[in-house]
Length: 236
Image 1 (cartoon, rainbow, N blue to C red):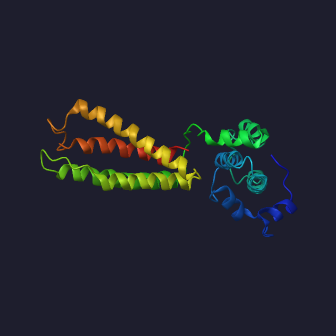
Image 2: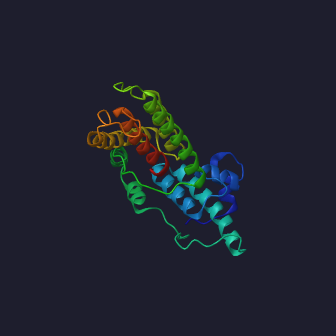
Image 3: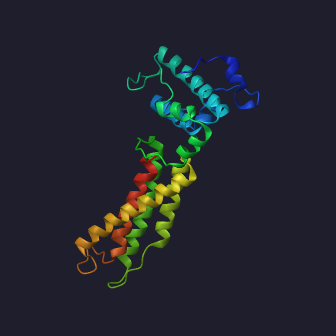
Protein backbone atom coordinates (compact mmCIF):
# COMPACT_ATOMS: atom_id res chain seq x y z
CA UNK A 1 0.00 0.00 0.00
CA UNK A 2 1.38 3.43 -0.84
CA UNK A 3 1.62 6.19 1.73
CA UNK A 4 -1.33 8.51 1.64
CA UNK A 5 -0.65 12.26 1.86
CA UNK A 6 -2.81 15.24 1.00
CA UNK A 7 -0.22 16.76 -1.33
CA UNK A 8 0.04 13.64 -3.50
CA UNK A 9 -3.71 13.29 -3.68
CA UNK A 10 -4.15 16.91 -4.63
CA UNK A 11 -1.68 16.65 -7.50
CA UNK A 12 -3.24 13.52 -8.98
CA UNK A 13 -4.78 13.82 -12.42
CA UNK A 14 -2.69 16.94 -13.37
CA UNK A 15 -5.76 19.10 -12.87
CA UNK A 16 -5.02 20.59 -9.47
CA UNK A 17 -8.36 19.35 -8.15
CA UNK A 18 -8.31 17.51 -4.81
CA UNK A 19 -8.77 13.78 -5.02
CA UNK A 20 -11.91 13.41 -2.91
CA UNK A 21 -13.97 10.26 -2.44
CA UNK A 22 -16.12 10.85 -5.53
CA UNK A 23 -13.10 11.36 -7.81
CA UNK A 24 -11.31 8.40 -6.25
CA UNK A 25 -14.32 6.19 -6.97
CA UNK A 26 -14.38 7.47 -10.55
CA UNK A 27 -10.68 6.68 -11.05
CA UNK A 28 -11.19 3.11 -9.85
CA UNK A 29 -14.56 2.70 -11.57
CA UNK A 30 -16.36 2.04 -8.29
CA UNK A 31 -19.58 3.16 -6.65
CA UNK A 32 -19.82 4.78 -3.22
CA UNK A 33 -21.10 1.54 -1.69
CA UNK A 34 -18.30 -0.63 -3.14
CA UNK A 35 -17.06 -3.37 -0.84
CA UNK A 36 -13.49 -3.68 0.38
CA UNK A 37 -13.00 -6.68 -1.85
CA UNK A 38 -14.15 -4.69 -4.90
CA UNK A 39 -11.75 -1.89 -3.93
CA UNK A 40 -8.75 -4.19 -3.80
CA UNK A 41 -9.69 -6.00 -7.02
CA UNK A 42 -10.22 -2.72 -8.90
CA UNK A 43 -6.85 -1.39 -7.79
CA UNK A 44 -4.94 -4.54 -8.68
CA UNK A 45 -6.67 -4.84 -12.04
CA UNK A 46 -5.84 -1.25 -13.01
CA UNK A 47 -2.24 -1.51 -11.80
CA UNK A 48 -1.76 -4.50 -14.04
CA UNK A 49 -3.48 -2.75 -16.93
CA UNK A 50 -1.27 0.34 -16.55
CA UNK A 51 1.94 -1.56 -15.83
CA UNK A 52 3.88 0.66 -18.25
CA UNK A 53 2.14 3.96 -17.44
CA UNK A 54 3.60 5.44 -14.27
CA UNK A 55 1.26 8.45 -14.29
CA UNK A 56 -1.85 6.26 -14.35
CA UNK A 57 -0.41 3.92 -11.74
CA UNK A 58 0.24 6.87 -9.42
CA UNK A 59 -3.34 8.07 -9.89
CA UNK A 60 -4.72 4.60 -9.16
CA UNK A 61 -2.58 4.26 -6.02
CA UNK A 62 -3.66 7.69 -4.77
CA UNK A 63 -7.33 6.90 -5.37
CA UNK A 64 -6.94 3.58 -3.56
CA UNK A 65 -5.32 5.32 -0.58
CA UNK A 66 -8.16 7.85 -0.34
CA UNK A 67 -10.83 5.15 -0.33
CA UNK A 68 -8.80 2.94 1.97
CA UNK A 69 -8.54 5.74 4.51
CA UNK A 70 -12.29 6.39 4.27
CA UNK A 71 -12.94 2.69 4.83
CA UNK A 72 -10.52 2.57 7.75
CA UNK A 73 -12.17 5.56 9.41
CA UNK A 74 -15.60 3.93 9.07
CA UNK A 75 -14.28 0.71 10.56
CA UNK A 76 -12.74 2.48 13.56
CA UNK A 77 -16.08 4.17 14.18
CA UNK A 78 -17.90 0.86 13.95
CA UNK A 79 -19.90 1.97 10.91
CA UNK A 80 -18.93 -1.05 8.79
CA UNK A 81 -18.18 -4.69 9.42
CA UNK A 82 -14.64 -5.96 9.06
CA UNK A 83 -14.06 -8.19 6.06
CA UNK A 84 -11.43 -10.69 7.14
CA UNK A 85 -10.96 -11.86 3.58
CA UNK A 86 -9.41 -8.54 2.54
CA UNK A 87 -5.83 -7.77 3.42
CA UNK A 88 -5.54 -3.99 3.56
CA UNK A 89 -1.78 -4.15 3.25
CA UNK A 90 -2.39 -5.40 -0.26
CA UNK A 91 0.50 -5.07 -2.66
CA UNK A 92 0.90 -4.94 -6.40
CA UNK A 93 0.39 -8.39 -7.94
CA UNK A 94 3.63 -10.23 -8.63
CA UNK A 95 2.71 -10.51 -12.30
CA UNK A 96 2.41 -6.72 -12.55
CA UNK A 97 5.81 -6.25 -10.88
CA UNK A 98 7.45 -8.65 -13.30
CA UNK A 99 5.77 -7.01 -16.27
CA UNK A 100 6.88 -3.54 -15.16
CA UNK A 101 10.49 -4.75 -14.86
CA UNK A 102 10.58 -6.13 -18.41
CA UNK A 103 12.12 -4.16 -21.28
CA UNK A 104 9.61 -2.35 -23.54
CA UNK A 105 9.72 -4.96 -26.31
CA UNK A 106 9.03 -7.77 -23.83
CA UNK A 107 6.11 -5.84 -22.31
CA UNK A 108 4.61 -5.40 -25.76
CA UNK A 109 4.86 -9.15 -26.40
CA UNK A 110 3.33 -10.03 -23.02
CA UNK A 111 0.53 -7.51 -23.54
CA UNK A 112 -0.35 -9.15 -26.84
CA UNK A 113 -1.04 -12.45 -25.08
CA UNK A 114 -4.61 -12.39 -23.72
CA UNK A 115 -4.93 -13.23 -20.04
CA UNK A 116 -7.13 -16.12 -19.01
CA UNK A 117 -10.67 -15.04 -18.09
CA UNK A 118 -11.53 -14.98 -14.40
CA UNK A 119 -14.84 -15.28 -12.60
CA UNK A 120 -15.82 -12.76 -9.94
CA UNK A 121 -18.99 -12.07 -7.99
CA UNK A 122 -20.76 -9.01 -9.43
CA UNK A 123 -22.37 -6.26 -7.38
CA UNK A 124 -26.02 -6.88 -6.57
CA UNK A 125 -27.26 -4.11 -8.86
CA UNK A 126 -25.16 -5.42 -11.76
CA UNK A 127 -26.50 -8.93 -11.23
CA UNK A 128 -30.07 -7.62 -11.10
CA UNK A 129 -29.64 -5.59 -14.28
CA UNK A 130 -28.03 -8.38 -16.30
CA UNK A 131 -30.61 -10.89 -15.07
CA UNK A 132 -33.43 -8.59 -16.19
CA UNK A 133 -31.89 -7.82 -19.59
CA UNK A 134 -30.94 -11.38 -20.53
CA UNK A 135 -34.11 -12.78 -18.99
CA UNK A 136 -36.16 -10.51 -21.25
CA UNK A 137 -34.14 -11.56 -24.32
CA UNK A 138 -34.55 -15.24 -23.42
CA UNK A 139 -38.30 -14.76 -22.90
CA UNK A 140 -38.75 -13.08 -26.31
CA UNK A 141 -36.76 -15.92 -27.90
CA UNK A 142 -38.95 -18.49 -26.18
CA UNK A 143 -42.17 -16.77 -27.29
CA UNK A 144 -40.89 -16.67 -30.86
CA UNK A 145 -40.15 -20.39 -30.72
CA UNK A 146 -43.58 -21.18 -29.30
CA UNK A 147 -45.40 -19.21 -31.99
CA UNK A 148 -43.57 -20.78 -34.92
CA UNK A 149 -45.63 -23.33 -36.88
CA UNK A 150 -44.46 -26.93 -36.92
CA UNK A 151 -41.78 -27.49 -39.52
CA UNK A 152 -40.70 -23.83 -39.50
CA UNK A 153 -37.36 -22.97 -37.88
CA UNK A 154 -36.57 -19.26 -37.96
CA UNK A 155 -33.37 -18.42 -35.99
CA UNK A 156 -33.81 -15.52 -33.52
CA UNK A 157 -31.15 -13.32 -35.12
CA UNK A 158 -32.36 -10.05 -33.56
CA UNK A 159 -32.43 -11.51 -30.05
CA UNK A 160 -28.95 -13.00 -30.39
CA UNK A 161 -27.61 -9.70 -31.69
CA UNK A 162 -29.13 -7.91 -28.68
CA UNK A 163 -27.56 -10.44 -26.32
CA UNK A 164 -24.15 -10.04 -27.98
CA UNK A 165 -24.33 -6.25 -27.76
CA UNK A 166 -25.44 -6.34 -24.12
CA UNK A 167 -22.60 -8.69 -23.21
CA UNK A 168 -19.94 -6.46 -24.77
CA UNK A 169 -21.49 -3.39 -23.11
CA UNK A 170 -21.56 -4.91 -19.63
CA UNK A 171 -18.00 -6.22 -19.93
CA UNK A 172 -16.75 -2.85 -21.15
CA UNK A 173 -18.55 -1.29 -18.18
CA UNK A 174 -16.38 -3.51 -15.95
CA UNK A 175 -13.31 -1.96 -17.61
CA UNK A 176 -12.65 -4.98 -19.80
CA UNK A 177 -10.93 -3.77 -22.97
CA UNK A 178 -13.14 -3.74 -26.04
CA UNK A 179 -11.11 -6.30 -27.99
CA UNK A 180 -11.04 -8.71 -25.07
CA UNK A 181 -14.76 -8.15 -24.42
CA UNK A 182 -15.64 -8.98 -28.03
CA UNK A 183 -13.40 -12.07 -27.99
CA UNK A 184 -14.92 -13.41 -24.76
CA UNK A 185 -18.44 -12.62 -25.95
CA UNK A 186 -18.17 -14.62 -29.16
CA UNK A 187 -16.35 -17.43 -27.35
CA UNK A 188 -19.24 -17.59 -24.87
CA UNK A 189 -21.77 -17.71 -27.71
CA UNK A 190 -19.88 -20.58 -29.36
CA UNK A 191 -19.68 -22.53 -26.09
CA UNK A 192 -23.36 -21.99 -25.26
CA UNK A 193 -24.53 -22.76 -28.78
CA UNK A 194 -22.41 -25.91 -28.90
CA UNK A 195 -23.94 -27.10 -25.65
CA UNK A 196 -27.41 -26.22 -26.89
CA UNK A 197 -26.74 -28.04 -30.16
CA UNK A 198 -25.68 -31.17 -28.29
CA UNK A 199 -28.81 -31.08 -26.13
CA UNK A 200 -31.01 -30.45 -29.17
CA UNK A 201 -29.39 -33.41 -30.89
CA UNK A 202 -30.50 -35.53 -27.94
CA UNK A 203 -33.99 -34.02 -27.55
CA UNK A 204 -34.80 -33.64 -31.26
CA UNK A 205 -37.61 -31.15 -30.68
CA UNK A 206 -38.10 -30.99 -34.43
CA UNK A 207 -39.41 -34.55 -34.23
CA UNK A 208 -40.94 -34.59 -30.73
CA UNK A 209 -41.82 -31.01 -29.63
CA UNK A 210 -40.86 -30.08 -26.06
CA UNK A 211 -43.49 -28.05 -24.18
CA UNK A 212 -44.76 -26.72 -27.50
CA UNK A 213 -41.32 -25.90 -28.89
CA UNK A 214 -40.52 -27.54 -32.21
CA UNK A 215 -37.78 -25.11 -33.30
CA UNK A 216 -34.21 -26.43 -32.86
CA UNK A 217 -32.86 -22.88 -33.20
CA UNK A 218 -34.82 -21.83 -30.13
CA UNK A 219 -33.21 -24.51 -27.97
CA UNK A 220 -29.73 -23.69 -29.25
CA UNK A 221 -30.29 -19.93 -28.85
CA UNK A 222 -31.55 -20.22 -25.27
CA UNK A 223 -28.31 -21.91 -24.22
CA UNK A 224 -26.31 -19.32 -26.14
CA UNK A 225 -28.13 -16.51 -24.31
CA UNK A 226 -27.54 -18.24 -20.96
CA UNK A 227 -23.82 -18.47 -21.71
CA UNK A 228 -23.72 -14.79 -22.66
CA UNK A 229 -25.49 -13.86 -19.41
CA UNK A 230 -22.87 -15.71 -17.36
CA UNK A 231 -20.11 -13.95 -19.30
CA UNK A 232 -21.65 -10.49 -18.89
CA UNK A 233 -22.31 -10.88 -15.17
CA UNK A 234 -19.43 -12.98 -13.85
CA UNK A 235 -16.50 -12.93 -16.27
CA UNK A 236 -13.59 -10.45 -16.36
